[in-house]
Image 1: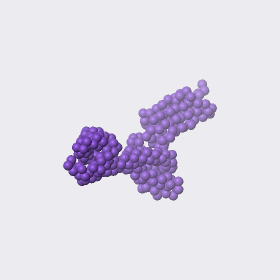
Image 2 (image 1 turned 90 degrees about the vertical axis):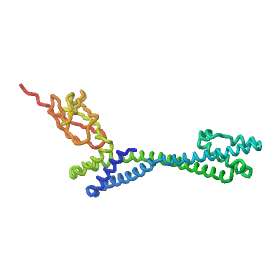
Image 3 (image 1 turned 180 degrees about the horizontal axis):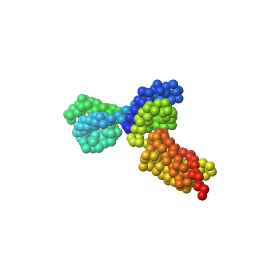
Image 4 (image 1 turned 180 degrees about the vertical axis):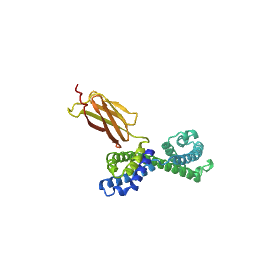
Length: 301
């Protein structure tokens, strides 16, 4: 369950903890960092609960079930022999079974059957010794039956706990992402001017939450500086990268997969001075840029 994201959260919390002195006097940022640490602790506990192994319990239940079926078959067979000897058709009907039939019974039906057989055996125990049935053999079936019921109940409860933990984990994960994306990331970014190393350290840890470099939408609106009219056509590229897009006839441009970090846009139109715009992308919301370009004066001949 989201191991990579949790690893990122742990590293992010480490970055915050190691540099707490930088932001601890800022009440808002400190509260956000503390809330994130609390969420992270809860997430780790929920993940541990949701990831509890169940194979061992399934194995134990199956071992007890196998023992119960073997002993129950012998007991029911003894009752059948007794029923035949006294011509008791009711016991014969209730006790008749085969080993294969017992194996394919549902767990609830198996529990009902073993209880029924125990009841009949206890009622006629004084007459069953010649048919290989004793108080000890009846008690052994009852012991395995109760053990099987308990293992089955334990397994059901464990599965329910795991499912509940998984639901709570996913809900808390959304809250944690919201806290980071819409609050804490912004609070830390504000510190870039005074503590760039810390901010870079923080976002380096945050970047790993998606397992790869994050990308964002960037939408731009271009207008003539003097007239306010949309600037049609041209090209917008990212300096130093093989990334570009065209300006539409309505004066807009869009990057649907803009890389995280600090970059510079180069905006070109044949009738306007080239515009250079620095852009910084760390939060996962869409970025909208409203830009003006200065027209190149017409040469007077």
